[in-house]
Image (cartoon, helix red, strand yellow):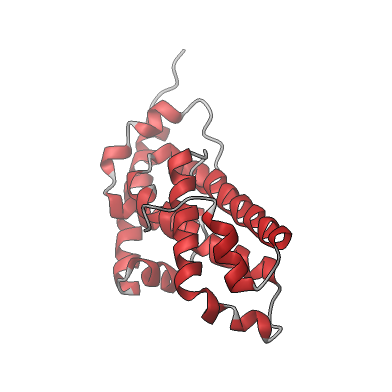
Length: 189
């Protein structure tokens, strides 16, 4: 990541890649920021300045390094500038989010990512966080939060599909065991 990244660098970078005027470049920056914001909001639950800055810096670096080669897809008419920027930004944002947030996710965050309403149960669920390794959390988020299949999860993690299945099976077994224990408790009067 380029530590010297400044948002004022966008115009020069994008105008060189897109061969576009300042207004078009400003519109492109808005798209990049919106996609990064939406990814953070959906997968982290909040939008912290440092996360946003890191993602924008990573996108800027990617475009600075590979932008001219990537732009060939646009010139061949396969996609629009907006779609192209959205895809690059989403991929970059998800790479950052996965590395920084997934391994340290709490159990309630994992359930929220799975679209489970955990209001009122956060404290109980978060007390279970230590029962999962960072790898368990990462696999659960990818498989059930993002809906990745086994092969996609394996590719993201750089492991075999067999390893993903084993980790997911362990994590799900731990959840089932806890659920069984919870169901067998007598309700408080």
